[in-house]
Length: 412
Image (cartoon, rainbow, N blue to C red; front, side, top):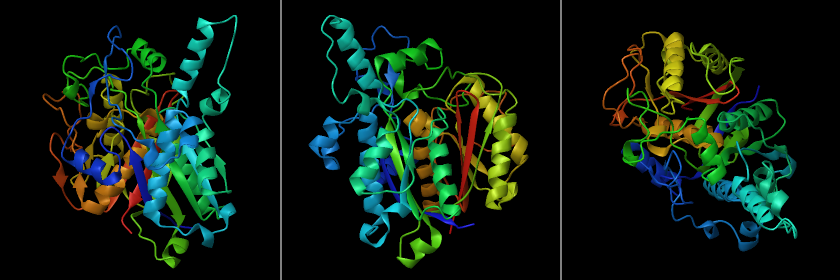
């Protein structure tokens, strides 16, 4: 099997318009949660979110790209352009059929869909639809437009596994490179779901917080008073490259992607298995593939979204896999950035990579009183970042439908 490394990173998210800005804010414990401004949420059960503010797509997109794309695709193009710039790949030296795009999203063009349906509903006797309606709506359009932008003609598609999607996309790209089917991929995920219908749907599930009067502390994984997740948006891109190819061109290598695994709970449409059986199996399989023993792992970026059931299910699964660990530390960065749904795995992969590069465990903020049911054998970093040597890091992402995904990075 070929080895796979990360040679480029890019992001646009509620805590930064690039990786440097984002990492600075995430390691200092800054919260991105505020009152919703994308639409009037006054009468909604939940009224807070982690929005991307002051987004300027013209930094990386031209006007025609903006006109024909939904916001989730604009976040994708923006992140991908940053990552390509960071990787410094001379495309003229690579066969375009050796360079692919696998890009994830959970919902696709939700705002486009809502806008067109509302327009039709207001004038059914003279229906007029935007000619870009379907292309903007399609979940695969981000991967398609990324390939068009850079002339990449290799493997190109979009996996969807709800909130596990970001990891699914990264895992697929990883496996194609290992099998020799490609030299490099742009991979990651994006989401732009802070829209009335999407937001209202999650609120109706009672999955989101109602801590509307104190937005900054609304996302509080593992705190006894947590009451649901905070929706986020944005995108994150990674350039994955075959190791020998990256080395030959003198690429800057951030880390090696060493292992990945997916399992299913086969339990419930929205709730995780209470004992975390599927989640623990995914972690074990990813470690096995990476050739890393449980006692050798340094950091886990937890999926923990701040829901009462989900946080405990995951930490129980982690406890089952790692037992009493003196080396491992864990944290949930969703306490600061919220839950980016289909993009969560991608942005949290960047966090794991930066943690390895800078030897910093970002904190889980807003911890006031720990849930007494949290097992004590896995140290969770609360409220302030921890400086420690990090050679190996794991990222978990789980999705509605019982999807479990785990990826593992290590220092090269």
